[in-house]
Each structure stands twice: as C-alpha cells, then as structure tokens.
Amino acid sequence: MKASAKPNDRRLFFASVIFFVGTCVLVALSVISRNNPVQPTPAPIMTADPQIIANLTALPNEMILTGDVAAQITQLKESVDACPDYSQERRDQMQQHITWLLDSSQIPMDIRIALGSNPTGRLVFGMATYTSIEWRLQDRSSDSCLLPIGRALNKLLTATGETPLPEFEDSGA
Image (cartoon, rainbow, N blue to C red; front, side, top):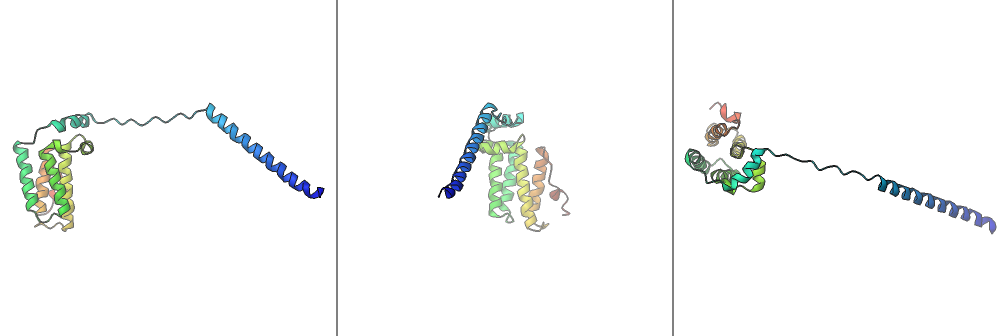
C-alpha cells in the first residue's frame, strides 16, 4: 500500500508547488502594476471654429428672416409645394430646411453644430442635395419641376458662399 501512496503524494506535492508558484506570480504582477501606474491618455480636445461658437449663441436670438432673401426662400417653398416630383419624405425635409431658413431660432442645437460656420449655406446645400437625389431618381428628366428648383438652389448656394451642384449648372436643358 505504501507504493501506491507515493504517486498520489507526488501529484499532490507538484500541484501544491504549481499553485504556490502561480500565486507568487500573481502577487508579483499585482505589486509591479501598483508601482508603475498606467498614465491615462488625455482626452482629445476638439477646438471648434470660432464662427460655430458664434452661431450657437446668435442663431437662437436671430429675428425671423425678412427682405429679398426671405422672398426667394418663400418663392422656393411655393415651387417645392407645387412640384409633384418630390417624394413625401423629401418634401418634408425640404419644408423643414425652409422653416429653419426663415426662422433660424427653430434650429435644434445639435443641428446648429453640424451646420458649421455657414448654417444658411449648409441648409441650402442640403436642399440642393435632396433635390439632386430626387432628380436622379426621375432619370434627370429635363421637363421635371426639380430642375428649375435645383437651378434656383444653385443661385442661393452661390449667394451663401457654397459651391453650386454641377448637375444643375450643365443639365443640357
């Protein structure tokens, strides 16, 4: 019986040694990590364009748009309302942008930030993009009511310092 007890004793001894060495390694790693604390990576600091900051404070206090630009936007709204080539979703998006152009105090804070330093130009650019997409879906038909709206939006893009969309400039119609 003593012969069979020796292999079990050896296994128990080796298991105890492995457990002891493993515990020592874990304790050593714990002590080392406490002595060498990881330096946290500083959070990136994003600097905003000063014009964006000015827009965030100015837009809520701006008066409702009037004058020649308001007349152009109102005429554009009438054209959008009369154009059957817009899907209802696009028409809703266009009307939302027109509302924001006519009364910038209605623009939500997160949208103001996204519009950057030229909110009027970016809103008009969004409208031109929506119109361009709808026109492409209509196979760029030269008799579509989207084409004159796109051209009117291009004029507004130029007036607001944005680049006109080429598909409305050189349409061949």
